[in-house]
Amino acid sequence: MSSIDWNNISQKKKDIYKKYTNGVFVAGSMFTTNKKVQEILFENIKSRILFGCLKDKEIPGLEGSPQFSPMKKDVLKKFLKNNRNVQILKHFHKDTKNIIKEFKPHKVVFINGSWQGPIHYRSEYWKAIEVGAKIELISPFASEREAKNYEKRIADSQQLTADSLYKKRGKYSDKELMKLASEVSKFSWDWIGQTGAVLAKKGKVLAVAWNRVVPYEAYQMFEGSPREENQIPSQEMLETQLTNHAECEILEIARREKINLKGTSLYINLFPCPICAKMLSRSEIGKIVYSQDHNLGNDIGYRILEMSSKNIRRVII
Picture 1: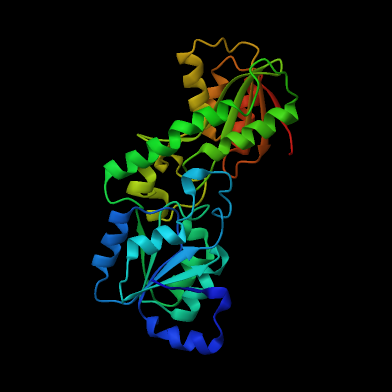
Picture 2: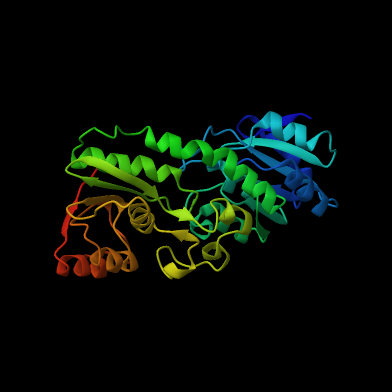
């Protein structure tokens, strides 16, 4: 099966490929299983399908997160075989909205985990609405078993990689520990927002954690995000999130490993939300160091932590 490159199509050839106008556009995505690709083909058997394949080496905004690795062209070709109603379109992620504008599909399929941030905050989503397309947000997996197998393949190496980011006997500055928190955040499976946390004492790392999707990491990819399905504003209605916040994970690790929290410091790339701030106020962690503000929680959370005699510091990296 041949493929066409969005960036190399002349206007004349664009007119030729307008036979896919009012068809189905599957936006370039993260890895999607063969069974799921076959499901997409079967469900759209009566339509011409423009199947996107990303030219980006990584999903923009999710760099360094192998769980969101883009689908490779050769793998997609193998899955699609020689289906006459399907055309592979290679494109950069940033061109998704322009493709939707040009081809005006009657349906746009977005595969979970293939963008950064809430989909309803993104221009390609609103472009699809503008052209009158039906929008589908779907799983990259055909079954829960596939989701869990994918998670196992990726997650087995993640904790090993996270542990390799620092030396257990090393001593680090506040800025270095904040950089470590930022690196750790890349292990999160939540494409809407990745948060990393480091627990340290006198510059020595005691534990690292990230906001973890529950009940298992690939669950949100498989079931979808309630925040996107209900178009909930970013950092509001936190109870709809499918993640344990990084602060919760740090405290759970400390409990499990019997780490004494007295005199420790928490480094986190995003200021704690009000719920986490209340929880931290009840802990023996003495210092909270953060990098980015929390849109919802800074005023409330800051006041809670400050009145609980926590030392709060911001470090920009």
